[in-house]
Length: 297
Image 1 (cartoon, helix red, strand yellow):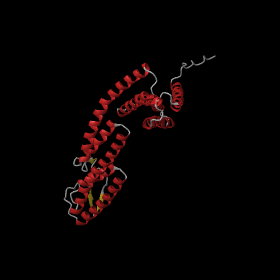
Image 2 (cartoon, one colour):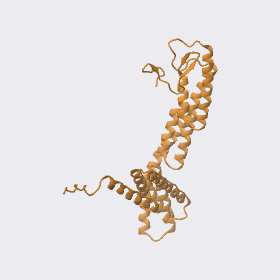
Image 3 (cartoon, one colour):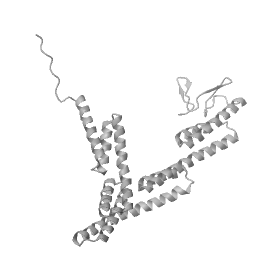
Image 4 (cartoon, helix red, strand yellow):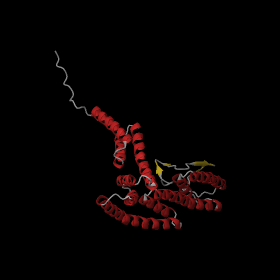
């Protein structure tokens, strides 16, 4: 909103509002017809800036980047800040970009750790836009692009390798070493599918890996990570159900079952949500037509 917008003869007030000091009206970023010459008014407004600056620093410490940005943008429009305060404002502007970029890079590292490479790449790209002078997001972006390409290529190879090993297992005699090798291939196939957010395929592959080698700790951890996603969908669905958002609840439970079709909690919750949805539809759309009024005697 422009500080100088007019509405029915009155100036619109935003962020810091309107200050009435010494008979003069002050809107941050919008000067009245007469230039601001009142030294006392300038001093008081600079004091107000310092309070706003402290608020913005608190917002940054709480990762409230949009609030800090609103304060920063508002005071950029006020031309009477002292040189010291102008320096503080310039530093705040840079710090907002850097702090949010650091936060997005932290999110990217977590996503990369669990194999969500495309989502991690999106966070890294955000960080690069927020702080163009910071080289780390640019390096991380190149690293992720290479990793995504390699894993996309390896995904097809793991699938082919698993198929060949499975054929050998079916045609040849029992071989524990072959079973462990096949488990290893299925685990890597599950990892590449997880990296591309193909959770149902990842869950099927890791189950096969553990059937062949139940002691594979990496496969056990991978299965836990996939089931965390299942539980997240279920938790969202139950929250929707409690808030009477039945359609969203049904969708969340179905997403959980798409990954793990045998999940008993998701199936039970889905049955309950579908029953509630049917009752709601029946109450709005009765199956029987309204009865005609009784004839008068």
